[in-house]
Image: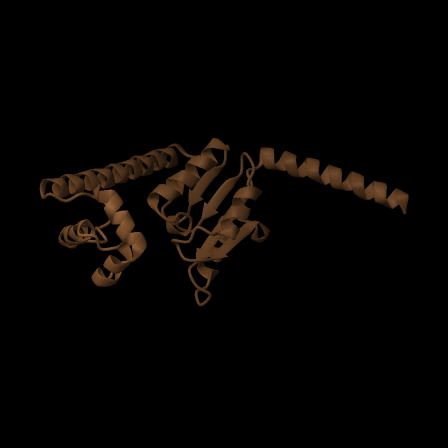
Length: 212
C-alpha cells in the first residue's frame, strides 16, 4: 500500500512537471463564454471555441447579465490562467461589462503575460495587428472617460450660471425653509414645525445645518 502511495505521488509530480513544461512550450487556450439568462444557450459560443481548438475542460461559463459584477465563471477562468496562456472568447461583449471594464481585464492579462483572442472581432494580442487593436481600444476608452468628464463639468457650469448647484435637489425648497426659520424665530418648537410643514425631523435638522 505504501509503495503504491509513493508511486502515485511520484506520478503526480511527474505529471505536474510535464504540465508546466507543456504550458511553457505550447500556449494553453482557455475559453470563456457568457449568456444573460437560463433560457439562452451557450452552444454557438462553445462550438466556436471548440472549433478554434480550446479543450472543453478549459472552458468556463457564466449565466449573468452583462452589467453584473458577480461572475464566478470569469473569476475561475482568470485564476486558472497562467503566464503564457491565451484567453479566448467568442465576442468582446461576452467578457467586459463596458469598454473600460474590457480594457481593464485585457490590461491585467497583459501584465501577467497572458494573451487575449476574440474570435468574432479578430482581435489577437499575440500579433502586431492585435496589439494595435488593443491600443486603439484603450485610446477610445480614455476618450470616452474624457467626454463624460467634460459633459459633467459643462453641466455643473451651466447650472452654476443659472444659479443652481450640482448634487441632489434640496429636500426643503428655499421658500419653505424661509417660513420654517421664521417659525423657529417666533418660538415654535421643532416637533411642531415638523407636523405643520410635513417634514421629517432629520430632514429639518439637515436642511438647517446646510443653510447655516
